[in-house]
Image 1 (cartoon, rainbow, N blue to C red):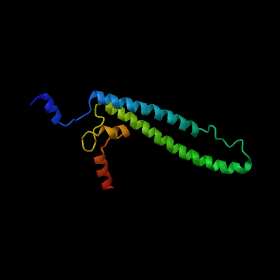
Image 2 (image 1 turned 120 degrees about the vertical axis):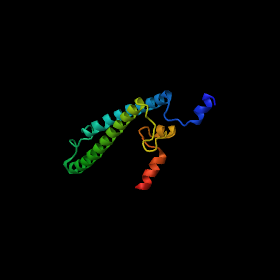
Image 3 (image 1 turned 90 degrees about the horizontal axis):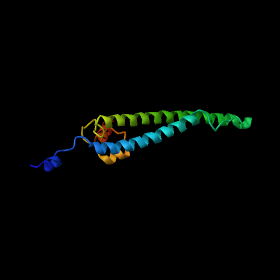
Image 4 (image 1 turned 45 degrees about the horizontal axis):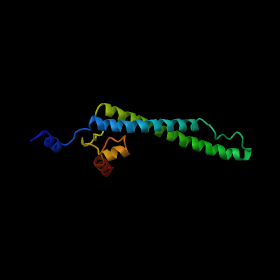
Length: 135
């Protein structure tokens, strides 16, 4: 059997260096965007433009209540964005280790389409569905 046929019959166990580089570019773009979004969220959380200092006393209490609720929501968004950034950084580490795109449950390659949509994923849809059935 020639090498080409043999390679076609053997299932891929990891993505090629070229494919990993493609994913790295995608993840770096998402990381840059996520960090910019985080800075925007943090500046909003710090106070910024929506202060109640210049409003009439009648509305100040209502606006302060809204401001507190908004700050709590922004704090949740900041935490979520920080976790997303951390997961993107972990994905970059998996690329460097050449383990990116390998399902941690099944050991099979995660389809490229899924990785492009959810670049931080570590499990295939098959494994995700099995996981959801158990819940």
